[in-house]
Length: 64
Image 1 (tube, rainbow, N blue to C red):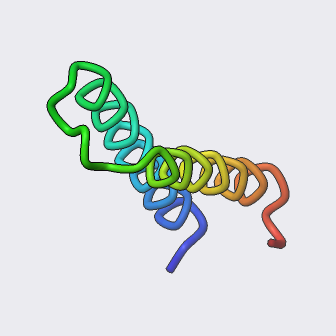
Image 2 (image 1 turned 180 degrees about the vertical axis):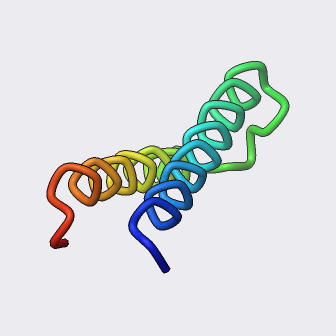
């Protein structure tokens, strides 16, 4: 897997995780998904941040 395709895949994963976490957070705020605990939302957000940092590091320092 080349560096550009890996970075593209990481950015896609970041976008998906971030989008899902914002959607779940909004739906929970509207009272539709009240059964989802807040910890799950935090895990999704932290996962998105971690993937974003890995993507940035992979793009910035290509040796990782």
